[in-house]
Amino acid sequence: MGSDHYFTAAPASPENLRSLRVTLAGRELDVTTAGGVFSPDRLDAGTAVLLTNMPPVPPGGDLLDLGSGWGPISLSMALAAPHATVWAVDVNERALDLVRRNAKALGLTNVNASLPGDVPDDVTFRTIRSNPPIRVGKSELHGLLEKWIPRLDERSDAWLVVQRNLGADSLQRWIAATFQPGFSVHRTATAKGYRVLKVRKHGSPPTAPIAVAEVES
Image 1: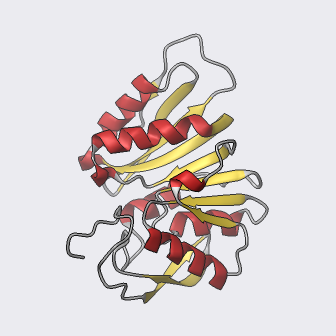
Image 2: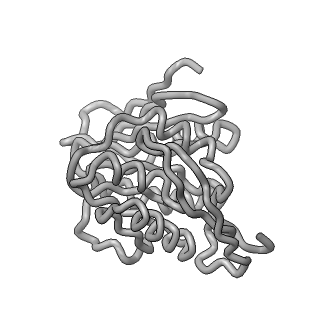
């Protein structure tokens, strides 16, 4: 990939389109991936953990995949909730092109692959599902979450998967300290070295300090 990263806006590396067979929303599917995007050769282990350990998506409304890559989370949500609008958000233009290509190939008309600045400011989300780009650095990651988590609808959840060795527990503590009052964060699953975190936006601010709950490893 040379100097490109999966969070590079316009990768200069060769595209090298390839076909990948994956299971999404309980279906065996052929998707297209490419060089210069996140995990082009397989369904990333963290994404697989998230897809296995998250609840069904809301059947309607606006749903957000933050850091979509080639689209496994977006496509899964669109397949499971055909009446919802799925926003696949990424800074990588090549990744967004792949999301569009894959959605079209699967006959999905409910996916909007968008740069962050192209999502209308008045859109709020009934859920956020994300394998966030940890390697952008702590400051960038925190800024990303500070921008998008407050855009949850009331009584709605964000589900994040983070590798334990890349700071999942410290990120959970940061979320607990940053999004209060009105939010809670819980670790709901641990698998294959990853944590799944649920961030809840409550209908009204809680009277007690924000809870940091954990499940046994």
